Length: 172
Ligand SMILES: [Zn+2]
Ligand SMILES: [Zn+2]
Image (cartoon, rainbow, N blue to C red; front, side):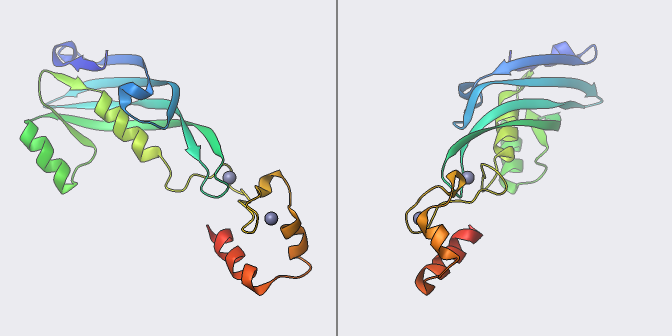
C-alpha cells in the first residue's frame, strides 16, 4: 500500500489515496488517521511525485503549556531518481537536494516521504492561538481562563522584581 512499484509506472501515472496512522509514519505527535493523495509520473529518467498530506497533530502550547490539536494540509512536490543506498546516504549527509529521494529497489517507498513532510510541518514553538496569554509568572494560572489576582493588581502597582520576569514571560 505504501509502495509504488516502478512497473506500475511504466505505462504512465499512478494516483493513490491512502490512509495512514502515527505508527506507519513514526510520528508521536500525530493523532487519528492521516490521508495522503499522491500522483506519481515518470518523466524521462526521473519520477515526480505531487500531492497533499492531511493529518492532525497534538502539540503542547509553548506559552500556556496546554495541549491542543491542529489540522494540517501540506503540499508535496518531490523527485525520485534511481540510485544506490550509498548515494542516497551521501546526499542526505550533505543536506543537498532535500526534495530528491532515491529509489533503491524496484519501488518508491512513500512512508519516509510522509514522515519528512510531517516533521517539516511541526512548528518550533506551537501556540494554542496567536494571542495566547500564557501563564501568570507568580502563580502559574493560565491567563486564557481569565485574570488572576496578580494580573489584576499588576496595573495598579508593579513590583519591580516581577516586572522583569513578566517581560521575559511575555516574550516567550
Ligand atoms: Zn497557549
Ligand atoms: Zn497569578
